[in-house]
Image (cartoon, rainbow, N blue to C red; front, side, top):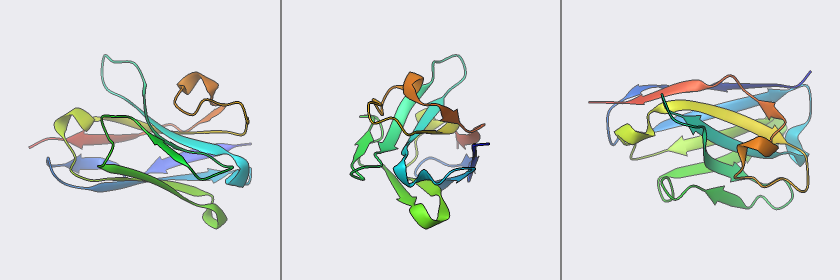
Length: 125
């Protein structure tokens, strides 16, 4: 059974940093594209960042470019999201997603087969 478990969320002030982690189990995720998405209250789930399994190339939403960094530790089956210069508009539940399809469009939530339960990030003064 595939499981993704996120951690690292919390309450921080504007300008602070957080690092989210997503640990996978039940599979070896070296051949999975991994993505981070977020959902704020009353809004749709939106793409944040992704890292492709076959090239380690990355994609970012325009709203987080230059502030967030996605990375992975394959032996640990873990993907990270380093978030710097956090803003109140970054407040959301952050979800980790994984999929092994070579035809996956990493920025589309609908293409991912596996999801974590999310971790809350709140940015407020």
